[in-house]
Length: 277
Image (cartoon, rainbow, N blue to C red):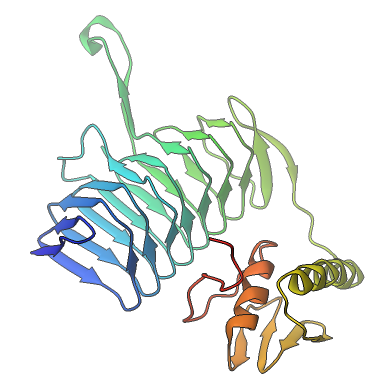
């Protein structure tokens, strides 16, 4: 099967192609996989993307800025599979799929982060090392800027990996913060109590009201923890559930809250009319 858009220079070739609704493709995208290529609803794949392998599966609400590369050495092997869950953000990352790479839901790969699934050079018959192992990343993980994840690593859910880290072994403390080269355990993220949550939310709202004024949005927010209402749109800051009618102003608020990890995903894209692009 083929999907071609000559105007945007998009070429997708696969045995099976699934493209969800409201998918946005950038320019200069080249995808060649032997098996299945799939991208879920409300996703964006940015400019200058190159993807090679066996099966490549993106979940719903993917956001990719630009410059993604999936493939590398071993990409022609049957284990060259990549899968990423829903509501993930990735950038100009290099992901080697000599072996399988599995990434959960709500994961962020910061710019210039790489994942490598093989390492070798001189002959193993002379005693030199070689390693071919997949990588698994659990739900809710954020990997910091310019980090490297090496073959065979498993990262447990809800872990923070600091910028410029090199992950050489499993990270297994849920909600743990790791950093360094090699990455080492620093501390565990402690949950806030109710009063701390309410105080933090109050600060976030105060900051947003300054931004909304700057954007020319003259509206008030109604708050009753954990609910926030703007115009006819209400969301829950703990469950991320929402109801009501969205508009361009609620888009602006929703996108601001996302910067604090309050990640509200709706059918409307993350493109604000108040940006200066």
